[in-house]
Length: 151
Image (cartoon, rainbow, N blue to C red; front, side, top):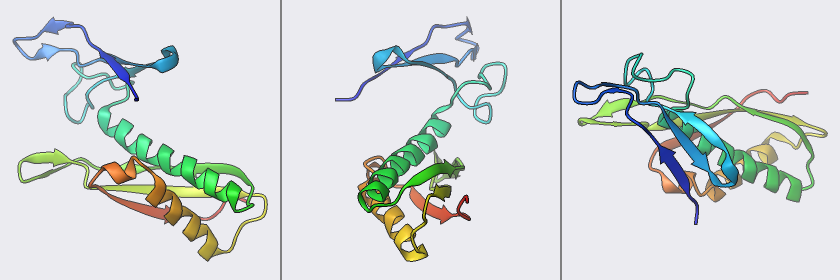
């Protein structure tokens, strides 16, 4: 079982829709993260620009899950990585009256000790994508863009 505690307290005029959407995400082990609605969804000052919004967290969780599986499959295949960088992106769009993120791009750069050939590198990412339980839980398209390896 996985758990996250979400804590919010009214700070403003709730009835007038003039209240802060800032809140806290508390995870096991006591880690706390500032959360908020995105300023693109709820204008400042009622959102908190410096906090993590659900859309960013969604994209980050997909990226993190993919990376963890990729690292594991690379290690099992005998490849050593020095670095891994992903600048994951996704855009909130309106479709049929509903807002959603239809596509997430993982824009990945890897630093290897000795890199595999391109086909093996792609195959490791394909395995990671299919193993990622977060990716398996969503209907958004997830595109893996392999950028030039870091040398």
